[in-house]
Length: 108
Image 1 (cartoon, helix red, strand yellow):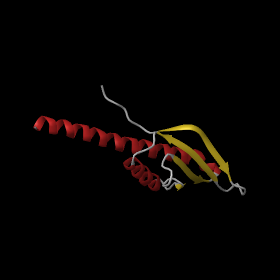
Image 2: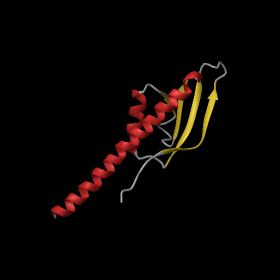
Image 3: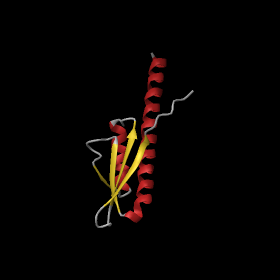
Image 4: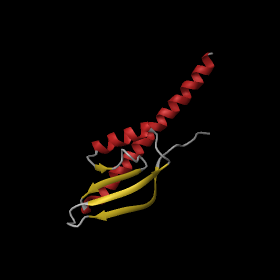
């Protein structure tokens, strides 16, 4: 039986549109609190998707991004893609670590 490890969005998605209606701030929370490897992978993927993020470095479980109101759905899709990419990255690392331990035990 294999264990599935993942970070996922939780709670209510917040959307705040600025006074000029030119930008919106997207706020969401993820759980569980992500490990450093997950956060690094997530941030690199988000940068690659050219998402303007704010506030992620000090609170890794809270994600804030800026978008034009018409692009909110697109930006959310990019954030979800980055979450999935980071989940896969960490899952592969956990599997490799578990596999490495098994190999070492057999070698002893």
